[in-house]
Length: 367
Image (tube, rainbow, N blue to C red):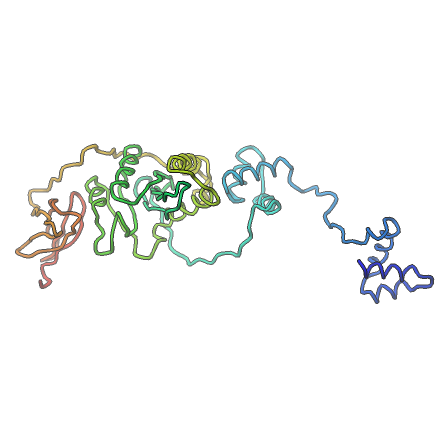
């Protein structure tokens, strides 16, 4: 301001060389004339920097479009691509993703962060629903009543359909079994379930079976565990946890378990039936999911083995006796009968529980 005022005072002196004066102040003659014109019209107040915003923006989004985009963002936490899909579904006509992103940025709804560099890994997807369910606990978090909530999540691998989202007080076997029983009664039984190696579905790589997984095997559900320290094997459920955190849990508080479960139920419905999924071509998970034809049995099936099977009862220490030797099967199977069956290799036997192979016996190894 002071330099501009000084420039104009000198420029208004009789006999001043306007061109030379502009050069010495480091401005163009066009700028010099602009300052002088403003000063003559409005005095010194006109010398302050003025907004460069255009008086008209013919290509700017309509106010109603901006209002709806911001409303969807605030209600769901979705990004530009999903908001674009929602707007077009609601009849707003073609909307560019960049337009939605500009609206969010202009109103402070987007925090620009550097792109994340992630290592490449092979993606996989089951061919049909209920071939594989992924199960895990999301990291626990506090509620308003100072209790901690453990969110149990079960996701169908093919459709990304959320089958179970339950607020639990703990991660114990009885709690998980109760929640899974309700899920099985509603959606039926999957062919296989994938889980990590932690409690209550595993303890370590050598002791992958627990009372919970034995119960699942008894129901005819195959069990798979991820490789230790490779959570990307459960990538779909891990991504589900991230979405749950961003769209529901972040910056919100929930008073108690009843309030938390009500919020989980509403959000799960929106996730399954309203929220478009990019991996599904912007379809919703419900469009690809069908319930299992395998109903949940209210009574566990009996353990019947073939006439040629050599049946052994698992001892309390988790071992069985076979050919005058003891072999470890797992304490989770104690007091249960298992079947020992020969393989095509001499001295190698497979041990089966219900319809599932659980371990192998090698008589060729020394005791």
